[in-house]
Image 1 (tube, rainbow, N blue to C red):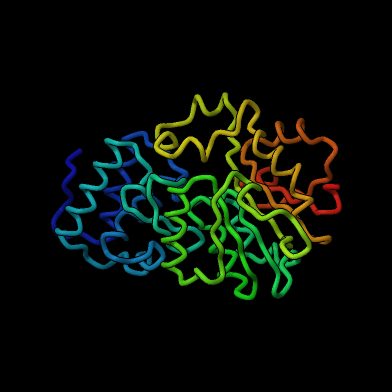
Image 2 (cartoon, rainbow, N blue to C red):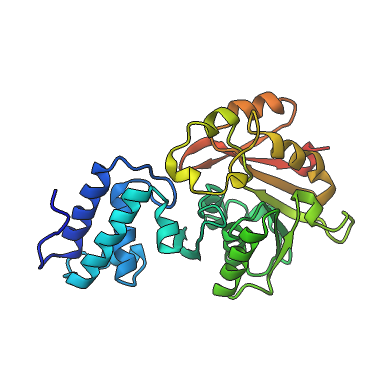
Length: 298
């Protein structure tokens, strides 16, 4: 197929054109776009200096040859490198919020983001409460928490200093450096020793949880991301075991731990059959995110 579209073309027609190129390349999606068309919309909207949502209101507008050329160039880079589009654009969107993105951290994405923005977590977030985002990576979940609940204080930590550098840029971008504290360290080692003054009402975590077998079969797009942010050991539960073991020390009496486990439902059930769990419904189903109340962790 000729990569060059007609010179006079609408944004919608051009998005269709890009979609066809992406579909023909057998790419993998899931890094901020669910399919070729949503990725084409995102790619084209970036050249127009709009959000993807804004671009939907301008589909009948014409797109300039200059913007077409830039978008086609990026499309070819996406196809040839198989890198996630977020890394190529240096930006990703999560729940309508933009985040700076680089290969120093995982691409912003998490089903936990849905629960933050739809209010599902408010019962565990009292006014003037404290929340912790373990394995914060790019900082996107901590930022969504702070934006959704401006009266809470958020702590966010990660073992990766490069990832925390990305998170710091995102905090500055959204003016949240005073509401969110960034700490570096290996899980709980990043925090002061637990006491009555530094316990949290809610701990959220999207940890590395991909099991060893699945790691070996991940598409190329995932291998562009830091392995540290994905690999969860033989059964995917290595970090989750450490998180659950120490979480009671850092939760308030009525607090809760929210964990994303992705496709590792069976491995989680096998590893923790004795723990009462509340499965949280997200767009992907009811087996991807779980909540454990503090009283059930003791």
